[in-house]
Image (cartoon, rainbow, N blue to C red; front, side, top):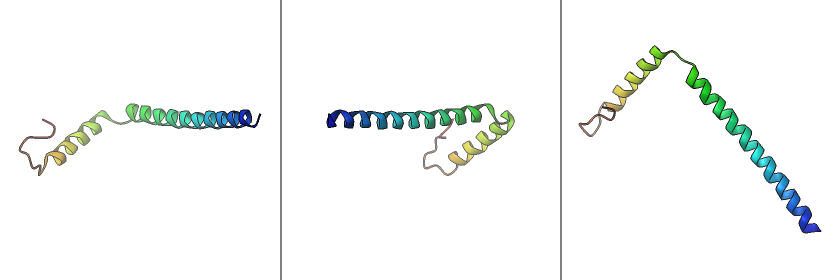
Length: 67
């Protein structure tokens, strides 16, 4: 009888843990979607060009990281 009570308790705590993880994952998915839809395309293009130049600057290889 005691073993059954422990199994139910463990099962309930596992279900609660899964539900918390599911809620956290859903929040992250919503954040990523908001990032995808927000922002100015021109600003993103400028940011990418700057980032690419910085990453390619002073590389040990003569080949660019992003050709």
